Amino acid sequence: MTVQITLLGLIGGTIIGFLSGVVTTYVKVLVTWKTTAIAIAAVAAIYVLLKLASWIGATYLAGVPDWAWLALQAAIALGLLWRFTAYIPVALSFLAQLYILLIRGTPIVVQVMFIYFALPLISGWRIDALLAAIFTLVINSGAYIAEIVRGALQSVPKGLKEAGQAMGLPFYKILAYIIGPVALRRMIPAMGNQCIISLKDSSLFIVIGVAELTRQGQEIIASNFRSVEIWGAVAVIYLILTGIIALTLKFVEHRTQIV
Image (cartoon, rainbow, N blue to C red; front, side):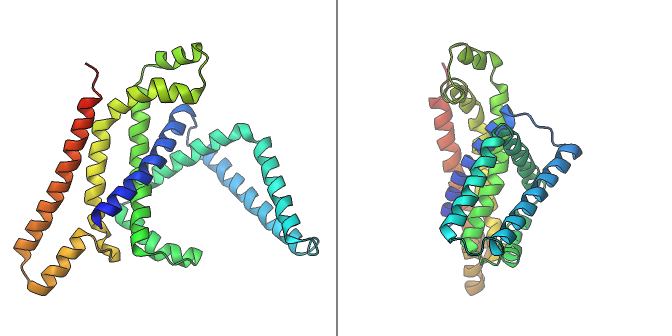
């Protein structure tokens, strides 16, 4: 269970972290009181428009078929996206920075307890303990991985990006074939550290009753009261798992090293 939670959490966190790191690196948006106020006003305006559209659909367009009303809503949404396409990267960068700030500023125990206990009260959806643990690890590791990616991308000389632009390459090819390989080598040590931290953080999910390694050790101790042997065995298992991660990343770092 511990390996499953850690693996799925790191896979999801890597995807979110990579996207957030790229956006925050190449789309510069300062998170200030002014930009925060603009973002809050934009969210409030979208909420009001959605409520207004719902009210119009329930009153004046009550006789319109559901498929036609959905098509109209989709057309309006696509029109707004097309009209404000230039602001989408800015909005994504702002949201990514806000996400990183929020997750890095709160403990993982508070995050998992909010997702497992508070979120169902807000949304009305009951969340399984295992899914809550995986989702928490995804968003938690994603925030830290985003900063690892951002630091690695910023460490790459700007001349490489300019060289790709001079060759007429699109941005995704510059990122994938020129900047990415260099940044990847530089982020491997920090990524290994984050993998080990996420593995050990999975033990904190005992607070919501997830049957991970620490929880299983606690249940065994409750039946035979042999704390020294059981906690010693749990520590050894964690040490073996973290050792495997460290050795694997050392091998990857050695293989990707430029001679």
